[in-house]
Image (cartoon, rainbow, N blue to C red):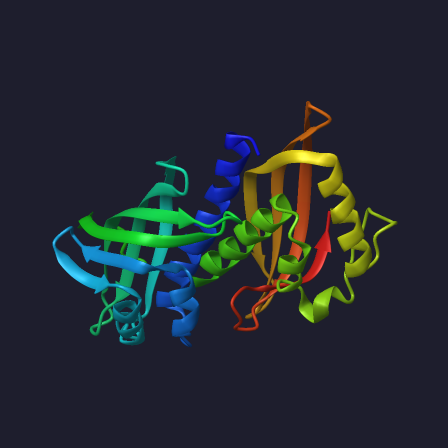
Length: 269
């Protein structure tokens, strides 16, 4: 696989776990095991480069279990991905953090995150090192909830990663009722999950490597647990030695059932 495509795939995997990381702190029903899934066995988490919060998976489990049930939000304002080696990348993020304090005033900070992310043979990502440093107060004193955005973005980047790696079984986890009904408005030859799996296998056989470049993500809230998301992207792949570029657009109706990822109720492309 070309380095550029592999690193784009890995960046999508890293963005997925970054949004999962923050959604954990904002959710009411925290499932510790799911948070541990995105951490390496030798994970270290520091505050301001001095205070060691977590040293290893067992320590991480205790720390994650005792996270306070605060009403807070974390918006990823900057995300910078830099490959460092064969299976490691540095991810730096700027986070706009808010918290509703006991007196109902809005506190918060702009927090700089420096992290190391490791990748396995499938380009799946885990945090190996996290250092979070508040750098200044958050000037925004009107609370904005980020839980929905982090849940949606995590799903989207997981979806992109699975499309790029042609992982049809992984995609099945994201579908309500295993994709039945599974609607493709413009593709008449694909009417259900099984037919789409065959389509993905044919694409995989034809495509040497490729990746998506996300251009825009628009979210519309439909109800307390459903959103409509429109994704515009460019699909770059190599077929028979030639680079092929195509604009793509997905409309996803998503439902939050409280599981690891949001579920895709309807997909149109």
